[in-house]
Every structure is written in structure tokens, then in C-alpha cells.
Image (cartoon, rainbow, N blue to C red; front, side, top):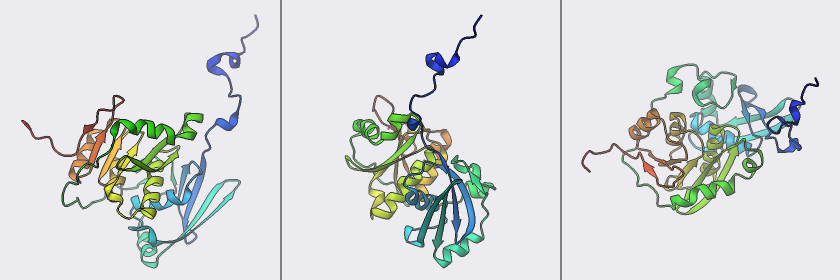
Length: 259
């Protein structure tokens, strides 16, 4: 009996066009030629990613503390050499980093104090920005051009009112958010008046990135974890879950019984 050709079955076929496969590359980041970390990313908007990552890792506090980013590509991947202001370079050298990060949030940290840094809570709750929640999924679908072709990318966007200002895609959900944070913080002065939107599972680490970067509202298409809600309430971040019926669920503050 002839063995069946498994690749002829619909669920085992090789793709006809491998250009539809999403690109994933290692990005080696150095600071003044001193190796810092290696990340697996989608090779788009690299400067935005580095800026956002440095902000959310508290390597810098404002984008202007990055003096220059030199990016080169070779057979192994992409190399980025970052030049920081003198004070920030000195502070960075006093911290410990591992060499490789697969874009999985806090997994690259070597101690609990790095994974859960002490952050100052906002003085008061900011109002949830007015926006058309019912339009956000369509807006995200339009943004995710590569995801529609490959089915393999996360995305994040930044909006103000009913306007979607910008968005970014990446294989890593944390990377996509870092790219948007970096882009917004470089370009928009009053960024806290807008809101962030993510497509992916909303764990505590995404909430932490939003808090560190100075945003007041994070909207997720996936239900947040209990730790994410607790952290958001502790730091007065408006956290909104937008299910597929587009009826938002607000985790902005502690629910008052009888209200």
C-alpha cells in the first residue's frame, strides 16, 4: 500500500508563497558598544521600539536622553548601537541585564525588584478619554495590514478622541506596545490625554509599561488578569476591556458597592 502524501492534505500543505510568512529577526542592542540585550522582533520601526523599550525599562525617562541610534544589518540579524547622555549611561552600568530576551515581558529580569520596580502612583484618577469604543476593532483591523496576510502579528495603537493617531505591529505583544510608546513619546507632547489599545492578552507587564511611560488609559481586546487589574488600580491607570460585542468593561477604580 502506498503511503499517503501528508503534504497534500489541506491542513498539512506547505504555503504556496513563503513571502507571506512573518519575518522574525534577532535585534542586538548595545549602549556605547557595550552589549545590553538581544530581542526577537519584527524588523520594522526599530528606533521606535528601542525608544519605547528604554522608556519602559526605565533606562531613560525622556526620549531626548537617547542621543543617537546607529542601526546595521548583517547575516545574523540586526545590530543597534545606542548613545545615551552621560548620566543615563552611568545609571545603566549600575544595573544588571541578561543577554537574551524573547519579548516575553518580565522573563528577562534577574531579580524581583527588577521585575516589579517601585513606581509612584498618579496623584489622582484621570478621566477615561472620550472615544468611539465600537469603532476600535475596525480601526485595529485596518492597521494590521501584515497580520491580515500572515496571521502571526500582535498590534498596538494610540488614539486621541475618535482619531487613531498611529499604530505598530510586531511578533511580540510587548514589542508592539513598546513601538507605539516610543513613537508617541517622540512625537506627541500631551500623550497622557490619549489612550493605548492592545490586541493581546493583557497581563500585568503591559499595564506596567503603560504606567511607566506616563499614559492614563489602556484598552485591551482581551480580558485582563487579576494582577493587571490590581496593579492598574494601585497606580490609577484606567484599564478597559473591550469584548467582541464592543460593550466596554471598565476597571478604572475600586467598585463601590451600592453605587
